[in-house]
Length: 113
Image (cartoon, rainbow, N blue to C red; front, side, top):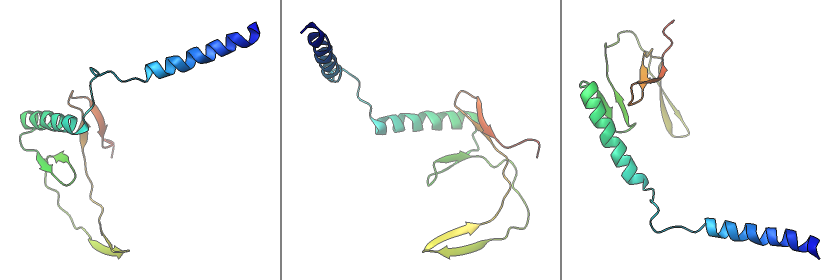
């Protein structure tokens, strides 16, 4: 009988612990994705306007960019309609540096090319 009570007690204790730990507290902070997005957007806009005053914002992609030197060259544009989808195909060369708000670089083009 003792061999049966120990695992039974442990099982009941584990279930009780799981139930208690899953209860939500009323004072726990609630994550609001929209509020966080608005806060991040304002922070990013302020950072970009202070550090890169000539930067432009593309509202369709959500990307801030700055054209440092306008490119020249012959581009071949080809519009392909596949399954009612239109694709613009060309091969531009882009040099970029992706930075976090802290200034640390997270991505950039290969400088050796």
